[in-house]
Amino acid sequence: MSITNLLWFLVPVLVLQIVMFFVIRQRKKKMKKNDVLAKYGISNRSDLFRMLQNPHLTDEDRNKLQNIYESRVLG
Image 1 (cartoon, helix red, strand yellow):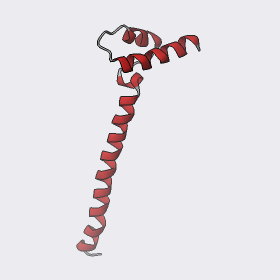
Image 2 (cartoon, rainbow, N blue to C red):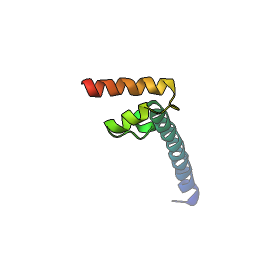
Image 3 (spheres, helix red, strand yellow):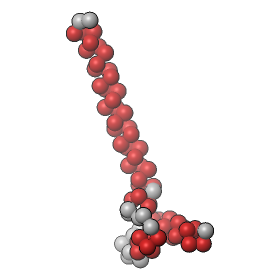
Image 4 (cartoon, rainbow, N blue to C red):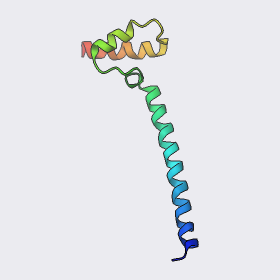
């Protein structure tokens, strides 16, 4: 196998890996943005309650956290 044939194989594989890396990274960021528990590092009920008391929390995130808190406390 010549070096040219090897390059014709390796270059597309490398480009595909790079594209996959960025697509997966973007998808993970989007999932983390939508997942408020991961976004704020909440792992238990006390963290969740403490975060609900935070005055700098956005209304959208506060509503999501409130719904989660109510479903965990009542459920």
